[in-house]
Length: 377
Image 1 (tube, helix red, strand yellow):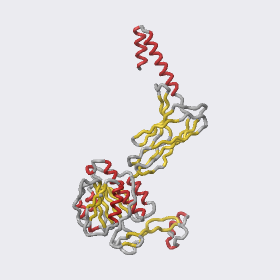
Image 2 (cartoon, rainbow, N blue to C red):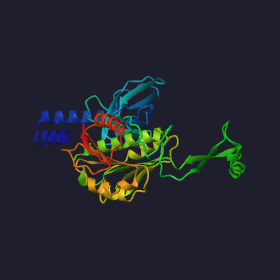
Image 3 (cartoon, helix red, strand yellow):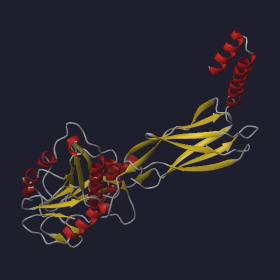
Image 4 (cartoon, rainbow, N blue to C red):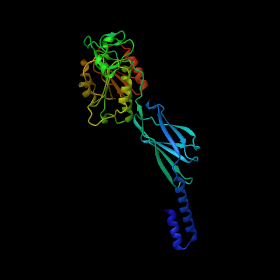
């Protein structure tokens, strides 16, 4: 537009110099358009490795670029969208038929399901007067899951089995049918499900789980006004993931609740830890959510209850359900001071995951008492 105005002013006023400058600018713009018009002879594939990471872990985008056409192309810049961020990647000059692999880091500082792509290739002229954008590939997804630390499962019930925690509130003979799976050598033939075998043509057996295994129920406070600092809620989710994954990896059922929603519920099978981490990836404060004590009052009794709250929880409301569970723990995120703890409730204060790990180990090894106490780390 400036070149057009300069040329028009010079021509109208009879000054050749401005007109010549304007004409030069118009020619430069025309050449820039011609420069960027040809479609880049490229074949581009994009991968995400790995597709699931903990918050803060490394994840990379991998571009496989193959030159096509009769001549090499240069001056290309790729932009990959990763959530709200845009990652810029320089594309090297390629000869026809040559393939290059380019890698770049994806941001993983925030938890969530992050859409990645589609990849946009930008070609501009040397003077940056014009550019043309073309999209390649489809959109991928990177799951940035909560961070976790190794936490032992809570011993639940008054009896402790040699192979791990067991609830003394469960009825005897509680092994129940859970699902079907393919037969493997060593399975008992009495567990074969013949109807499914006849229907699928594959030998199928029943899978049983022990319904008497103690359930670890994790309740996360999810009211938005309870978490003015988003980093505090992130730490709460990390703590919930650590508690749940510790129980899952020990083979015990887990139930996670936030507000009015059940985030995850597992039965104590293989792969439960992955399910829990995937489900917690999208956990967020929700308008209209119940308070943590209200959620705890609606939880089915039995097993251990772990409530994760900001620093000043309603401990009285949580203690009201104490008789319904084998153990009740409250994890306070970055509290401002000590709290008066009701009998039978264990309170752990922590400011980061390292604090939580140390306090958890200390409390697990402490003999059970009739009264609880806040023990800041």
